[in-house]
Image (cartoon, rainbow, N blue to C red):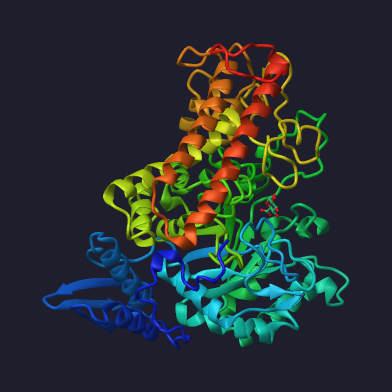
Length: 616
Ligand code: GCU
C-alpha cells in the first residue's frame, strides 16, 4: 500500500503542483494554477473577470498565450480546462463554455463517527469521533480536485442522518461554517442532509409539515443556518425510506413535506433536494403482487407538478438500487413538470467495492441517452472518496470521479474521449499503444463485471449486506423486495402487462421494446421476463447456455485483464495497489462464475454444451 498521502488527484499531475496554501477566491486560485503551470514554460495567460458570466468561460488563444474570460468561478473552470487540454494534448474548448446543470453535486455518505456508508476508500475525510476532524490541507486539496472537474456542491453527511449529524444545522453550525470556508475559494458550496423529524428532537410534539409551528420552526432554523453560511446550496432529504422519518407519518404527501422545507429555504436562495428512493422495505417474499421497481413511479408520478419551484426530486438511475444493469427509472421519463436530478453512484457498492475495476462512463452514456439530458435539471453522484492515500482506494476509481465532473458539465460527453484524457493526465509516461490497452480495458470493464456477476439484468445475486461476492439466493427470502424467483423450470420476474405491470410505466417506445422477450435487449431480458432455461436467445443459444457462457467468458476476461495490466508501466504509487486488487478481482470472478453456474446447474440439470467444469 502507499505510505505518503497524494494531496492531489493523479489527474492533476505532480510536476506543476502549486503551493498548497488555501487561496482566498476562485480568481486567485485560477491565477495560482496558471502561474504554477506556466512557470518555466513558453506562453502566458491573462484572466479577464466578467462577473455576469457566472460559471461560464471562454479561452481565447493569442499569439503569445491565452486569454481566459469568465465569471467568478468561470475563470477557475477555464484555467483548469486550459491546463487539462494542454497536458492531455486535447483540443482546446472553443467558444463560450457553460455547464449544462447548475447543480453538480457529490453526495458523501459520511457519518460523524468517521465511517462512510458504502465507503471503500477508508474513513471519512472530515468526521471522526462524532466531531469534525480533518487536515485543512487535505480539504483544500479536495476543493481543488472537485473544482478541477467542475463539481460545485458537496453534500457532506450521510442521507441516513445519525446522531449527532442532526446538529450540523444546530450546535455544530460554527464548525460547519469553518468547513464551508475551506471549500469556498474552490467554488464548492456545501449541502447538508437533514432529518425530517428534527423539530421533534428540538421539543415540538410533531414534525407534521402542515402544522404552522413546524413550518415556523424550519423557517427560523433556515435563517440561522444561512446567517452562518450564506451560500449554502440547500438541504438534501431522504424521507419515508428505509426507516427514515417523513411526511407519511402525518398522513401528508411528499410534495407537502418537500414544499414546506422549500418555503423555508426560498428566501435564502437554497434548493431542497428530495430523494425519490422510496419503496416498501418490509415486503414479504411470499407476496408476488408487490414489485419494488414499481414503487417510486407509483408514489411520485401523481405528484408531478405539485412540487415548489425550488424543489429538486433526485432519482436514482434505475428503479432498484444502483445495480450493475437496470433499465432507466421510468420516473426520469415521467415527471415533465418537476425539476429532476439524476443520482449516480461512484461508490462501487454493487459494482466491485473499488477492488474490481468498473469504469462507469459507458453506463452513464446509456442512461443519459435514454433519459435525454434536457429532461433533468441537476446531477448528483454518491462519492467514492475516503481517507485512503490515493483518495479512492483503487487508482482507477479516480476515473469515475473525474468523468462524473465531465458528464455533469457536458452530459453529451463521449465516454472514450473522457477516459483517454484521464489516462493521458494520470499516466503521462504511457505510449499511444499503452494508452490504447488501458482505454480498451477500462471501456469494457463494466461488461466484464456484469458477465461474471448478475446474468441478463437479474440483479441482487450479491451477498446480503456487504454487496460484494456471489450469493444467488442471499436476497431471495428477505424483506427488501429483491427476488429472482429461480426454480427448476424458469428464472426472472414477469414485469409485462400480464405480470406485475411495471413495463406500463414506460413511454410507448420503451414499453413495446421491453414488453416482448423477442425484442427486449438481452442484457435486460430477465429483468422484464420470466423465462424457462430452454428459452432460445436471438443468437440460437438457450438461456441456460447463455448464463454459463457469460460466466465463463466474464471470468476469462478478468484473467486477461490481469495479464494486460502487467504490460503497463504504472508509477510506483499505483502499481502495487493495482496488482493486489486485480488478484482479488480474479478470485472474486472465479467465485462468481462457479457459484452462479452451480446454482443454475442444480436447478436446471442442464450440462454445459462445451463440457467445461461446473461443480455439481
Ligand atoms: C442503498 C444502500 C444504503 C443507502 C441507500 C440509499 O440501499 O445500500 O446503504 O442508504 O441505498 O440510497 O439511501
